[in-house]
Every structure is written in C-alpha cells, then in structure tokens.
Length: 275
Image 1: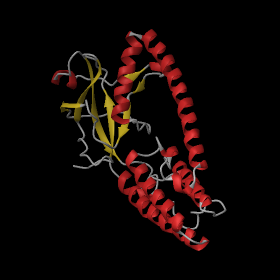
Image 2 (image 1 turned 45 degrees about the vertical axis):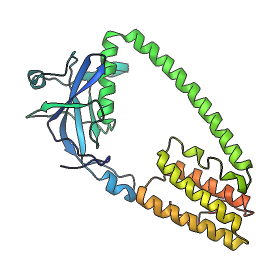
Image 3 (image 1 turned 90 degrees about the horizontal axis):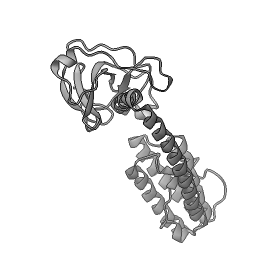
Image 4 (image 1 turned 90 degrees about the vertical axis):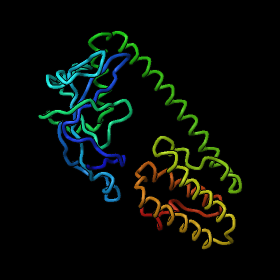
C-alpha cells in the first residue's frame, strides 16, 4: 500500500468514504483511480511529491445517514451548478489519506470517474463542494449572505495582519544586535511555513546574533554568516521549505543582522546560500 505526501497509507482504488456536510447530513465519495502527478515543484521535493495521486469522485447523494450498500451501488456523480458552474463533475485529486471525519463505508467494483482536470483540492475540496451544492439548492440566500460577511471579515483580518507584520518588522529593524534576538526574527514566515520550521530557522538566526556580537572583524562576521547559512542549506535540503517568499524574507533578516554588526551591502548570504 502506497503512502502519500502526509506519510499515511493511501486508500485503495474503489474505497468509499462517507463524510458530513452539515448537521445530520452526509454525502460520500470514492477513489476512482490512481495517477502520477504531471509536475514536480523541485528536485528537493521529489521524494515528497513523486507519489501516486488519487482521483476522487463525489456522489450526488445527501442523506441523514451514511449511504447503504445499495445506495453506493446506485450512485450517480455529483455535477456542480454553484457559482456559475455548468454541471461540472465534482472530481478532485489528492495525494494524502482522507482527513478526520471521512469514514470508510464500503468498496466499489467498478469505480470510474471523469478527469479531475488538475484540481488538487482533494478530499477537503470534495467535502466543501458537496456542502456548498446542498446549500445552493436549499438555502441560497443565507449562503450568499454568509459569503459577503466572510469576505468582509477576511478583508479586515488581512488588513490587521499586514499592520501587525509591519510593526514587527519595524521593531526588528530598529532593535540593537543585543536585543533583536528577543524578538520574532521571521514574522513574515507566519502562514508560509509550519511553526516548527519557522522556529528551527529562527533558532539559527539567534545563534547568528550571538556569533556576530562575538566577532571582532569583518572576516569573522562574514564567517559567522557563512556558518549559519550552511546550516540553513542543510536544513532546507532535508525539508525543501524555502521558496521565493521564504527566501526573500530570510535574506532580508540576515542582511539586517549583518548591518547591525557593522557590515554593509545586500544579500550578505548570497555567496553561501543554495536556496
């Protein structure tokens, strides 16, 4: 049995899963087939991404209980009519095991389905679309009003988050080398990477602060940066976390620490990094 990107065992072709779409409302989906991804983000991530992808199809079914064996056999494919969709087949792709709430309820002998058309929203996307289709059909006014309220709340939260980030970056820039290690060193990684990944790299940057303070000349300071960047290189070889936004934020943070130590120039890590 293959394992997905999450490290968990993938379900098999033909497996059927029931899932909730509201209070005492259930739908179900099935694994139609397995395929290979058409792309890889990077060679560093090949071992994570080069795994079978599951093509998952959603049934046109809503019941107060999970489906019976007869309902599974007699299933039809859900075709979406929400938000301008013109009977689009609800078929998605995933490389991971089903999330919490999905319960295996049976198997299909002939689990076919149309193409997923590179839609990788997976099991959670299936659940979201099935729930939205039911709401669209039965309580559209409330659904659209909730959409407006949610959009306004998201916009307000985005403005607040941007303001908070600017404040944190300003504090980091203004802090002395002796004090900056007490602050968040990579606040702009929040939401880009996991908390554990961010913490691991911030720990290396705090070590860099200590080493820069101890360094007595330019060569020693550059050597401290080189040593830290080397550790980040090896860490990223294992995790493959650093992409464009992460790279720019980390390079800026290292520059600021270098400048606090009296160095000049941009991209002080540039000669040493491979991310």
